[in-house]
Amino acid sequence: MQQMQQNNQPIQQGQAMLTSKNLTILEDMLNYESLNYKKLDMYAQNCNDPQLKDICNKAAQLHKQHFNMLFNYLNSHNKPAQQQ
Image (tube, rainbow, N blue to C red):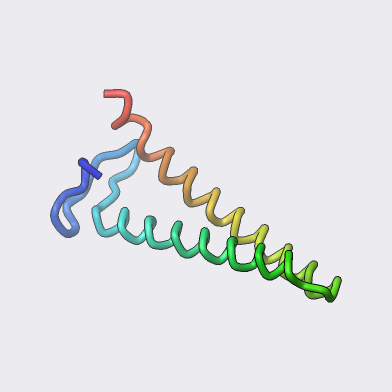
């Protein structure tokens, strides 16, 4: 990311200030949500028990929703920087 600065110096993006530390945390959270979604989706595909399969599918969808919320939040703070 070209806009990242040293440590906790704020980066102006959108309507709020994000620090490089915040961006790193968001990136980590996106990676965790993506990994959890993929694992649970794989577990659901390999489950023979319908109840367990349903639980895995619901949990996978929850992680997918979390990923999308984080991704949209990050994009909403990144749009003005891209337009320049």
